[in-house]
Image 1: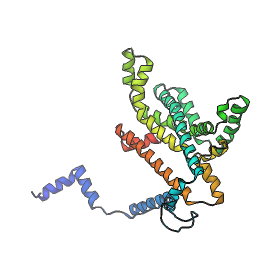
Image 2: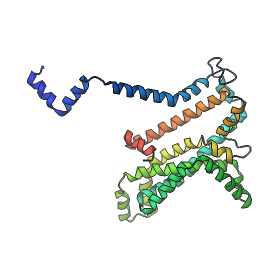
Image 3: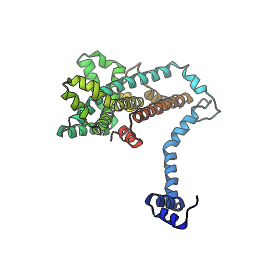
Image 4: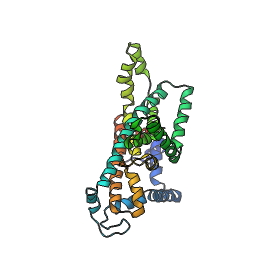
Length: 304
């Protein structure tokens, strides 16, 4: 069915239809093209080093910078070197324990800030922000004598254990991140359900377990996975607080650089990159299934 000229003009006068037609016919300006090109260049600048290290993880040469051919020799070498296996194992264990500590503390802090706001909230947020922006070298220098004091002077032998030291050190920044995420999740949700639970004479613990925690659970899971990924690469703090026999992967790489980078280092780095991407994908999936939009997911993961 064809439209007359008058009907076509009338459709163009409609706000939505007219805007669509004008957008379809208007040519792209040079500024739009330039911005697209600039965006691509920025992405290449950010991700080119990662792409290079992933490619060189399949290098069959003896040294990382000497490309001899494509193969999986570097990944197979990981199974033959106990030092690499131990470093990866220590990193995974400490990251997991640090994520548990950060999630437990950060979840309670985030719920408290969201459900009991007041002047103290801004002071507490300031302290969390201070923790987030403090240079890691400062935290590392402060943690080392503190751990020695707790372990030797006070006789708390657990603080002489390398896993405990690394876990506590890795959980500092991650706790602040989890607090931001949980608070951002609950601030945007009404507390009517919790108030109704109280009106029905439910005990505070029952309200927390059956209503508050389920409401915050997507953010709790997201915070746990992010804390886990943050705990994998805590190089500066790990290099200060580690003890003999519990060398994490970042410190192992740092010491291996002095004798020459080998392809197996790139191979393990690629595996950890894949683990990080999987964790982030799971975070996005959890938040999406909770009903969040893409904007909400980005805001929650950033703690906004």
